[in-house]
Image 1 (tube, rainbow, N blue to C red):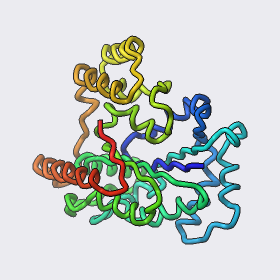
Image 2: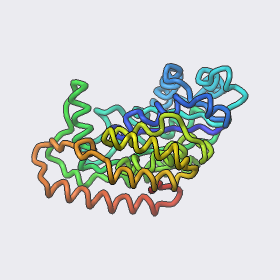
Image 3: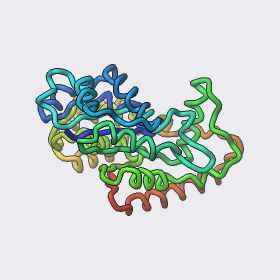
Image 4: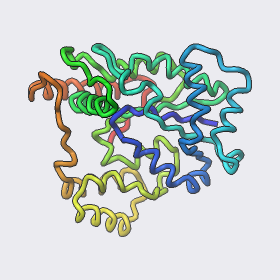
Length: 294
């Protein structure tokens, strides 16, 4: 069995990947892919918490955990188990410090890997420009009644590549896939397939919801009509069509992010964005990392 962890990050797909995969469970299971409902996660999360605390996994625990996660129909049919939870590496209040993104990520990744010690593991992670990610995370924390992201630190010192490097060092045998959340609307099908592992020609029900949500009503109708007429069967063909339609119909107010952190200026956003571009190039060049691009 191959165990696939979609790790988030926070404020990226907002549960969109899991929603699409849950909607397509029967079709995915026909291809050997099991997607447990989150209500089957409690045993997993309790076991993960124990592993994060440094307690050893008992013999036979992986099999018991698998039984708890897999529905009966998937016991023999599945050879790939997909788990998605943005809190695997941290909860929002612990996702960033003044010097590091997800400081507990290495220990948590090792813990997640140890839960299924006899199975191969994949990690999947979306990253996002800190210029928009930090304000979004701060708003998420305020919405939960928590303190916002603190001000007064140099956000340009935060590097996703540093996090990716720690994940690789902690779990060198695990496959790691990374992509930019900003690219998700165009390459949404490529991301879904990277996580789920289904055949490229498979058209998942509900897979158009994300790009359509960024378009005008006319654009959403045009998108549905284009897919019905063109019947694209490859990720490249889907990305090409989505890029063209988003260029025509995307609504600016649905793409813009409110930047609301004390002391930030337009220069701050430009500096962080330039640093992010350079950081993405570093990640793309890292050994053992698959970096998805449109």
